[in-house]
Image (cartoon, rainbow, N blue to C red; front, side, top):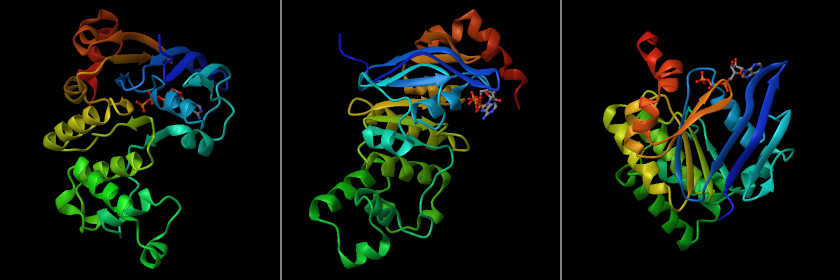
Length: 250
Ligand SMILES: Nc1ncnc2c1ncn2[C@@H]1O[C@H](COP(=O)(O)OP(=O)(O)OP(=O)(O)O)[C@@H](O)[C@H]1O
């Protein structure tokens, strides 16, 4: 059996005695696409914070490719190959899509440095591939600030992929997106899996269904159940804590 790319073992996070994560166990195999859902306050953000080193658990273990992560600083964990996409896009609005990606592939560069020392052919090709991957080929000269919300999300996903992370953590990528943009985002994440391990947190059930990926349901800092979307949606425990409440949500 292969070592999982990511493993959380009995991870507990206490905020002044309140258990945001409570003995959380989770395993991801390399190359898999996994959806994580759960009602508000289930611990989804804290779960990502623990993986990226932002929050330190009070007990338990987090292993990346079999090696412990707990105690390592955030930048170190990022360098090991864990990339995180936050909910709000963080692109350089005053630069074009292409320039945003050029900066992402030329690690540590700046717009001025790029003017003085252009990218190598290989890196320029990489930028072109990334533009095509996320469907922004025709928008390469457009300022990122003028893109739609969905296009900004895809640009940021491309910028993240440019860093070559093995594990991509994607937090609510389709909040505020149109139906068409949501479908495109699901297709993109599916395409990225296989060559990357992709873990995505979302509230949008149509999107999760579209991902056709195993679903992990978090509740009160713990895994309530795991399985294909149909099975999870039919699970009385899930209906009780999560889906049953959907009607009450705005
Ligand atoms: N720094 C903190 N101090 C105290 N309590 C916190 C802190 N961060 C999170 N919590 C609490 O821990 C619980 C889990 O929070 P978390 O943000 O991880 O949930 P979530 O599943 O991401 O929720 P949402 O879907 O609303 O984003 C919540 O009850 C929250 O109030």
